Amino acid sequence: EVQLVESGGGLVQPGGSLRLSCAASGFTFTTNSMTWVRQAPGKGLECVANVNQAGSAKYYVDSAKGRFTISRDNAKTSLYLQMNSLTADDTAVYYCARGWGANWGQGTLVTVSS
Amino acid sequence: DVVMTQSPLSLPVTLGQPASISCRSSQSLVNSDGNTYLNWFQQRPGQSPRRLINNVSNRESGVPDRFSGSGSGTDFTLKISRVEAEDVGIYYCMQTTHWPWTFGQGTQVEIK
Image (cartoon, rainbow over all chains, first blue to last red; front, side, top):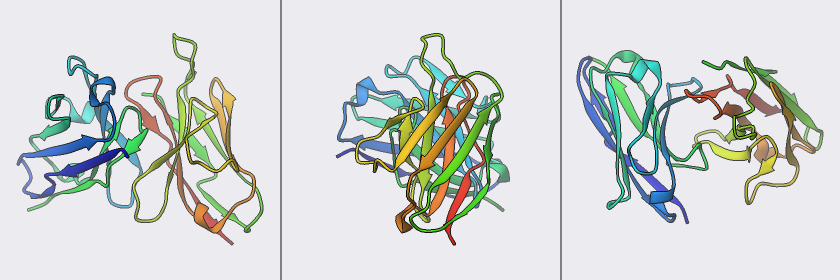
């Protein structure tokens, strides 16, 4: 059974940083690209970043460029999202997804507020 | 960015009746490899999204066959042949042909 378990969310002040993690199991991690998708409260879905199987190619939505860094550790079958310079607009549930959405985690809530 | 436009945004349906959701993209979703990367997701209340359909019409494992996807180029449709109570939720189309991958606004399906 595919499992994606996100962690690392929480309350952070504007301008602060947070590192999200996603522990993956139940599938061959090294053969799948991985994606972070977020959903602001009561809003729709937005792809934030994607990383290829080897971790050598990374893609970001414009609002994340220069502030967020996606990475993966294939030995640990884990995905990460380092988020810096956070603003209120980054408040959302952040989901880890396999590929382009084949499987999703339960999400972790990030709240940016003073 | 590719803009995905869904209609309607709200869809009240009688149990057992069909439902149809339209999704239009601002540019063609045909990839250079010849595939069309248009997906449909269901998000039930309080749950994570779940992919129902990939590549326009391929139903995911475990998805009831009352769900079907069709379309080409820039116009796509998700159909539910007979709506059941468990189908209540928000449905999103998503294109993964062009980065950034983008979603439609979502269509709220509810029971009349």
